[in-house]
Length: 171
Image 1 (cartoon, one colour):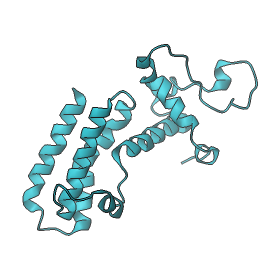
Image 2: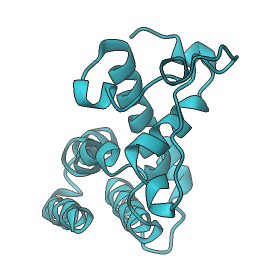
Image 3: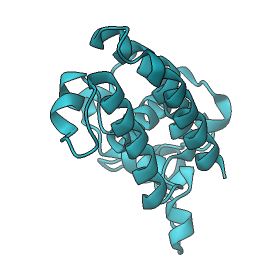
Image 4: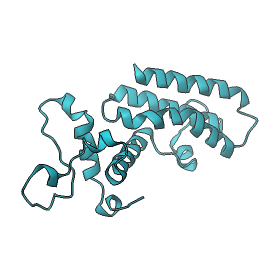
């Protein structure tokens, strides 16, 4: 399972860093955690998208919580949220949505990667009718829950919820 491998890789890296927890300040530990531990999930989250279950999302969130405990030297029962906010980190599920929206926007504006651009037709490309939703992405019909987890369904659903001023950005 891909999520389990990424989870184990991130936890292994975090365990390796624990012997150095008293040697560096919080700011450098935040950068180390972001580049060595959380980047494992930042890289693969858009690929997982909506296809991973709630239990896997919770496991990934626990890795982030452990990383925050490492940064600030917290105990297991201490509240994480104020420290996560102080480190300017988003919860992992929200970060997944942001990364996925960035990937979709990049595919739509720059055409990169090309195979994703082909999976994201606009409403105007699919229908001859002129409606107010012509600028939105086409949402295919799905008949099963498995279809709702696919990229061609959840990506347009996520991107269509963005405000128009964000969608109109070019960079």
